[in-house]
Image (tube, rainbow, N blue to C red; front, side):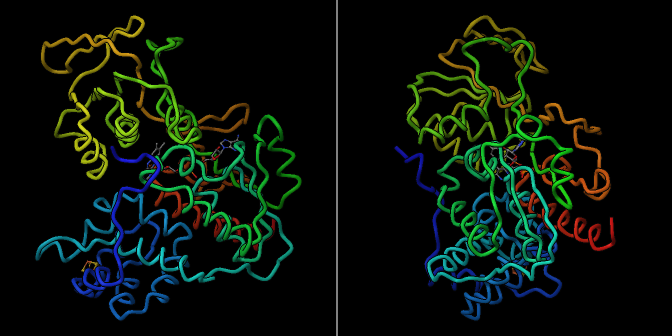
Length: 408
Ligand SMILES: Cc1cc2nc3c(=O)[nH]c(=O)nc-3n(C[C@H](O)[C@H](O)[C@H](O)COP(=O)(O)OP(=O)(O)OC[C@H]3O[C@@H](n4cnc5c(N)ncnc54)[C@H](O)[C@@H]3O)c2cc1C
Ligand code: SF4
């Protein structure tokens, strides 16, 4: 049985990383670098690795992408950097994620200190939410000289990196190390167990700080009306959070139905299997050729013998029995399980914050909502991934800096 709390993905050693870097064609105007939303610049760091300059490679990654170690593990590289890799024309793309993982691990093993706080400019910025976008914005602003405070409703930082993505894909120690860097080297302050809209108001924060950034994510798992108030049903993000908080020690489930076909659904299915659930059926609305989950996640679910049932939607539920109908064929299924987990997406939880919403995102113009109020991450992004959260975190820092330097 695979262990839930140990990272599954392999790691390169120095010989293997050099071998892989030697396959790189050192392209001019490299497609891999153009395709990285966070501008981590793989072409540059792979070139450094090729010339045995691991230190230079680590500097390139960390300066461009504060969460380079996290992205190395969770980025769907086939959609970004590896998609455009010229080496694909010869055999297969360069394993950019694995090279990045080696380099960022090297950085930690050798205790490199790459980032430092900029000269204090006596201005204070508050970031609400400590997911990847809030963390990146904090790092960028601190390097510019701002005094940064992060307010977080949970007792630990990281957002979905801590409470969503399972430990077999991202061990908590990776995140803890980045948070330590923020605290120690970049002097970012954290205030935990404080919920905006409940423990503190937006008006208070906007008065107290020169600028406020909302990085509150899509923090609520979606429920479908027919499943409401059913004690057999749990929303995927709540389930994954519960598993992580209890380090995998939850009640035994023998047979589970998962509904949904994205990465979050795959995380639920693989987690269940690693926790020794005998049978997991994942019922997916999309057909086999329309699947949305990344290759890596699908492959793992298949390897763990999750039963993927494509093209079906739930039409009726009675206690723990769900009736599904095929979208195109006249086919109906009735499945009874111990538990039903819904992985049908996440949504904004604006609580009693009075903010305008357009296309399910907080209305903003280049990250600015109004005056000294800004937003970043999933709440403003079309593409809800970690690498886009990093991109937006860098952008919102520049937007805040321009606003504060240009006068209020
Ligand atoms: C299970 C799961 C697996 C995923 N896997 C991947 C993956 O493999 N690769 C990938 O690229 N992306 C993945 N994603 C998507 C990715 O995690 C998100 O796009 C990313 O975390 C968004 O970052 P964020 O900073 O905008 O928000 P979040 O990570 O959601 O963080 C928001 C933070 O704000 C806090 N907060 C919310 N409201 C308040 C409030 N009122 N007051 C105070 N604090 C508040 C929350 O507690 C949270 O800490 C996954 C998502 C999930 C749910
Ligand atoms: S596109 Fe591929 S081959 Fe070209 S520089 Fe990037 S990693 Fe190397």
